[in-house]
Image: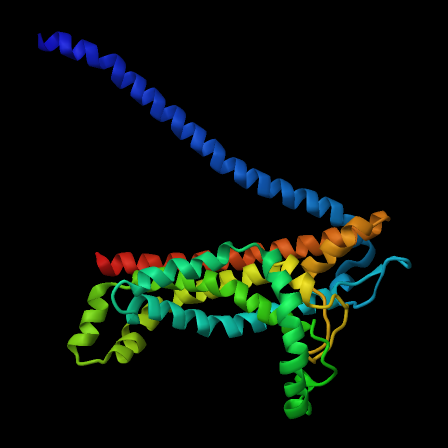
Length: 320
């Protein structure tokens, strides 16, 4: 009787093993196909950028001349606009995001944190064109009539705030990017803070630390790598943002210290000019800007993932 039961199970076991093998090969194929698509994109973009790379070399990233008629192309104003708007937006967004994450994980009473957290994450799901529309119709006019005249009147002696109140400007792009990256940084920082071992907090409390002192000496230092990774991920999001920034930055290829002046970014010039590129060199120059943007974004995201992975490994080690 027992021998008959063994014979009936053998086909099922073999079938299950074959199914596991097929599933393993299929998921492996899917995973490597994504890497292959990424490599193919980089290869194609590098190939399309080659005419501009051969024509301008390193001068492409140091020149500010951009004339499609004369076929003279330099990406410096777009690099400057992308870097300044993204970095300043990140400087404003990071403290705000850390504060929101601390409130959700450590301060919020009862179930309030579990209610606020999804609402903050919901902001990340809003399409960027909605942010851009709100920025150009509501925020830019408000900046032009209220904030910028105040800055010019009281701080106009500083180069950062000199000039005329245009509304659409580098300042508008910084504010819209800050609003857009806050949900991302807050969400990841919240996950990092939740990964801090409970024993870490209890040890600080046992030594007589207050809530603020516990956050200062036990929570923030433990999660600093992950928080930094969250900020860098937000930077990657800000650098690559296109539609919302294009609608509020003014799209003028200027390099100006004043935050009240219109500016331009790498994604914006690609979006605005790619349909109008009639020559091979113009298309190639835009493709080279895209290649630079993609490489920078990949490096930034890889660095962020590395930092988040390091803090997660420390948390697992602490928990063990």
